[in-house]
Length: 193
Image (tube, rainbow, N blue to C red):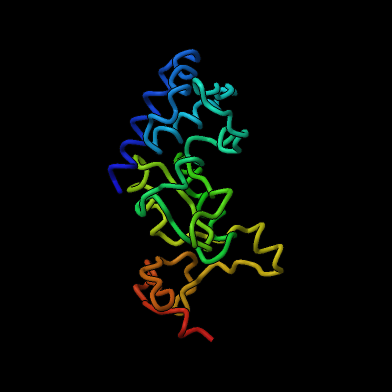
């Protein structure tokens, strides 16, 4: 699968260097291209707002929505597992996408579900997969606006022994485990009343 991701990335770079006429000439030979090459070509044509020319001596297909998709959105349909991050709720996927965007990593939440997958997911480009995995492996703070919508408020954790605010989160499995940097007290959320 990694070969598909590398091929997609290489084709995206290559097609971005082509002139408009070169892309349209290549599009006339669309049936001779691999599925990945076709998707990247359609995405590049859509990004430039170019029409897909009719293949020589072929029936014109009806227009596809894929032409309006970004290259990453088109890639989401065939993204390898290391580029896909699934979440239980759409709000969690949106929060993860915001964290990735803040870190300078482009990501998308696919506009359509592919295959039998029903969980919300975030997809990143292959070149960003390792960085995204590292960032998303850390706890993501809840979005304060989302909490206010639900009527809940985020309570800043404090050490139950000395009252120091903002302790270190050492683990989250099975519950949050904290350590105070001032008094070195360790506790978990399960122990709190």
